Image 1 (cartoon, rainbow, N blue to C red):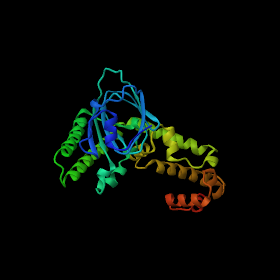
Image 2 (spheres, one colour):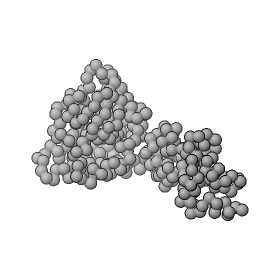
Image 3 (cartoon, rainbow, N blue to C red):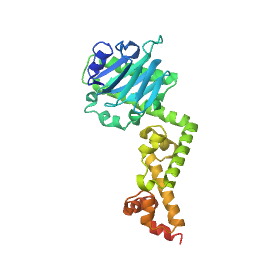
Length: 301
């Protein structure tokens, strides 16, 4: 596995000149030249990368997912994430696009150093990358070139703040476009919501929950073939509740059913719902309903 510690390491690997700035670089994707004998590459990097790519012949595996870059999409990769690329260097189609590389040290002592971790799309699997219209692509390319113009000009005490501000503008536009993508895919997203409901209903109806414990967001996301962050963001947009809250809502629904229709004790109900300790179940139930399990049961007796 290759490890690119610096942006300069990556430039050298893909046969590009030394970066004009050691901590931030805009790369023309069409100029990349991988070693000719390579058919696949696995690597980690110590910097953020934001890629706007089109017609990249090959596959990129990111986490457990694959994506073909045949359409214009924007992808986000954080430091230390593992990438696996299968190259097709025989293709006559020329790849195009841009790759913005940002070392975390460049963000040091700025507000974005803290905020960048809050942008969920840096944790998304590649098949959840951002699809953009032609107009949106032009907007993003304009911001990328503003960043390049700034680091190419004379560096002064304003340079870092101006570049960081441009990066933040780009990320904020990306966040807006992601929300639009969630909304415009309502049919598909509502299907996922239905699948999530069926998945949780099936999980709580099975006796194996007593052995495996409560379902996790990771479990649900894995079965729905998406990343936990993406699932939570999508559900939040659709319903106002994230994935963990959906799990808790389904759990409380099942608990209410058992409290009102069975003679099981609170401890027995807690056990059937995957809790090792009934106190944990009681605390969660009260936090969601404002009633203890016993107080709730009395309403039906």
